Structures are given as C-alpha cells and as structure tokens.
Image (cartoon, rainbow, N blue to C red; front, side, top):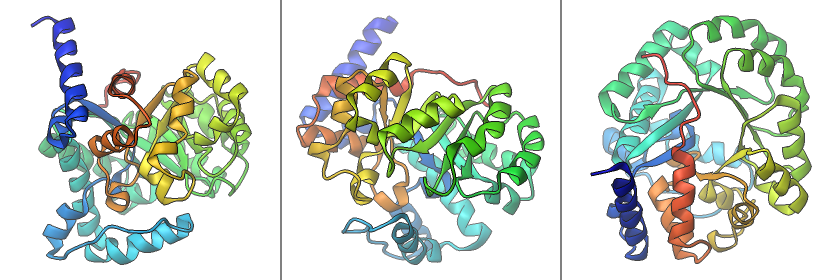
Length: 327
C-alpha cells in the first residue's frame, strides 16, 4: 500500500470512528500526546487494579491548582506512595500510551524526580527501560519541566550536567503562572536552545493573551502548553499563526480547572479558525480521566469541530519536529 493510500485509509477510519462514536476505533489510530506530566499519565483503572482499590474520578471542577493537587494526593498518590508507587505511575503512563496508540509521547519530568532516582544516569536508564518494555513503538520525547517558582540560579547551575546527557528533547515551565516573571528564565532557555531542545512553557492557561505573546518573545518559544487565553485576542492569534507557534491544548483539564466552560464552547475552535497550530493532549490523565481518544470524541460529540477538522489537528501532532531520544 502506498503512503498516500495508507494515510487516506487511516483518515477514513478516524472519521468513521468519530461519526460512529467508536472509542475502540479511535484507539487504533496513530495520535500524539505532547502535554503529559509523566507521573500522572496513566489511568486510575490501572493504578486501582495494582493497589487493589477503586478510585473514582473527580465529579466537579477544581477551584484551583492547589485543589487539584489535594485531590490527587488524597485519591491517587496515597495508594501508590514512595519510589515504588512513583515507578508504577510511570509504568502506567507508558502502558496507556501504547493502548491508545500514541505515536509521539512527550512526557515531562521535574528535577525532584531525577533526584529521587539518584541523578540523570540512573533516572534516564530507568525511563528508557520503561519505554522499551511497555511502549516500544511509541516515540518517547522526554521533557524537562521546571517549576515557575523555582530558584532560577540554582537550576541554571545544574543545567550543564543535565543537558550533557543529551536525553531531554524539550524544556517547559509549569505550575503557578504568576510565581515570577517569565523573563527570569531567559538564561536557562538560551542554554536549552543551544543544546537543541524544543522550547515550551505553560502560559495562557490562567493568564492573558498578552502573557502568551510575551512568553514567546522573551524565551523564543516554539510551543505553548495551554495558551488558550490567546483566543481572546484576534491580533495575537494571527501573530501565533504567522509565527507557527504550536499550542498543546488539553480540553478536559481546561474545563476541570474552570478556564473553559464546556467542550462545546472551548477556545480551541477560535484558535483553529485563526490558523494557530493546535494539538489535543491529556495533561494529567490520572486526574482528568480522559485519554487522547476520548478528548477527540468529546470535541466531536459536543459539535465544536468536524471529524475532518479533528483529523487535521491529529496530523499536526504527528509532525516530527524533535530529535530522536538517545536510547
């Protein structure tokens, strides 16, 4: 079968699966998950079966990131504590990626996770082993995630040793968007750029459209995690489109954190219409309980987007703009 014919066939199965509301059909189609916090990337069913407990997903939106973290600690993390529990959650992330046919998986890891496993060498080896064992057909794209409230000088002092391993493929800033100005991270991002990493940051989830534009300009970002606040500014959406800045959007996360009202009114519609490259992702699957396939289904069933439009978004996520990780 020619590549063109194969792509047409995959597109048709994807569209038919949406129209027939077949989640199983969607799960068989190649997709990406480019915004996934590794220790929260599996399913509550997988963790519940291992811990021999029944974990019920949250039923109401969270009032804040702190409320979300409290729910996670009480309902998930207490059933899988310590290093053993952490490793089980990492395992769950790779298992889920394989089951949902995630072809490109950007899992993010914090400095505390590296330290907990003894440093970069053992940490990267353990993660590569999980990848080989549970999702060998998935392209694994490790992401270094920095806390927006971190001590920038301390992080910068550790950066050479971390980047020298040539394991991470991208860098991100996450958590409280308002902890400190985005410009504080310029030295770190210059070093990450020199090392060939894809430059990303959480911004425009709770902030403004201007915050999105500022972050891109200050740090020379190529991708934004969330960024949906940009939908309030036609000018900034056009600017993002013209500069090919990709937004990795997480619909259920946005709804559960109160920054989007519903699937049917989600800002991804406006972003797409203005030509902003967007992808669909899970963010924290162990909390929000929606796989990538389910996210596509949610947007289709709400009437927000057509199957053809969602397939275009799927293909955007499959474009390979990163280097292959060292295994």
